[in-house]
Length: 456
Ligand SMILES: *Cc1c(COP(=O)(O)O)cnc(C)c1O
Image (cartoon, rainbow, N blue to C red):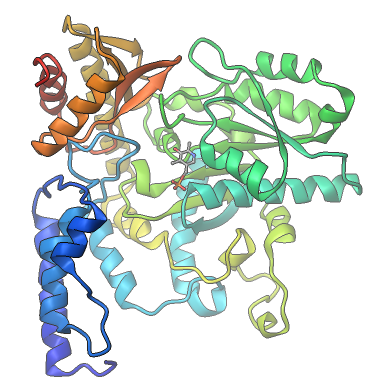
């Protein structure tokens, strides 16, 4: 199994060719299958004797692979898609072929050096100071959790005592991973600040909400989470206003830009992010709007020393790793072993340059704006919110939840697109989330017009 025999060479060539083919083609959307269907077609694949590489490859490419949606298809516009550059996707293969432990500088210094340059670009975009830094982690969920744990540890260190209950200010639009981290993982209370007409947290609303709390709850607040691009609507909170209030109270400001943070690179929307330079921690997922494959989150702290105090793991066998002055990614997050999750992003950034990223992000924003125009120009649909970034939220006049669900499964069955229903202000509607520079206005027109058809 570990020798590169003629068999292994053949197998590697077959898989490398499959990778090349996949990079070369516009992948079909494909569709989900039930466990029963897969059971019937793939059967039992793990056996004592093994099914051999030819059969394993066949089962994957004919049955199991096509049962996974192609998130990079330009008409995959649900949730937040992903659209890796060819350079990033190809380099990910090399990361996979290279047995690299990237939790520590000792073992993965070359990878960490490269990743840190990519982090630096992001920190500069955010306006964070020279000492800012962190690590690439699995995704926004781990990034948010790690940042909030560091925030609490820093508050505990400063105060010296724990309040009756810890609390963090969020809004209804804050990503579910934040509330999950706080309530379930950390056992921290949430203070929900009402959003403005667009669902944004503003400094004023935060100040008013906190003023209305009882003394004990207020005393427990240690952080506020501002969202730089909400997942459902693509709306950026009033980060500057929220940051002012955080500084008045000595709270940690965490900016969750998992999806929208990429907008910092786009001149036309950059002003929306004013105040991010005051963040104590900031995340952005390269696997969302920065054209990297799954899974990757850039987690950056204003003062990495505070993150280390919370996250460095101590064990006698780790002493050779915990060397003063070395940059160990495991010091900054809830994880020890780590794949070099920032490397595909770094490679593509190094190859193409940051200007190409700014252009590609602007292109998706322009398509979103043009999509809003398409919707405005049609009678059967109504734009519900002017897009701020690259999410377009709209409704089909006269449709109920069931109509959206039928339309959504029909267009996927016909391999026309993948667009799922959502809710805005209690009403069922739908949205286009556009992160793929290959998505065109014509794609959006086709989908909008498919909603005009009577539903069979
Ligand atoms: C997607 C998203 C997350 C969660 O990130 P994962 O990478 O899916 O773990 C957190 N916050 C926001 C705003 C997001 O859009």
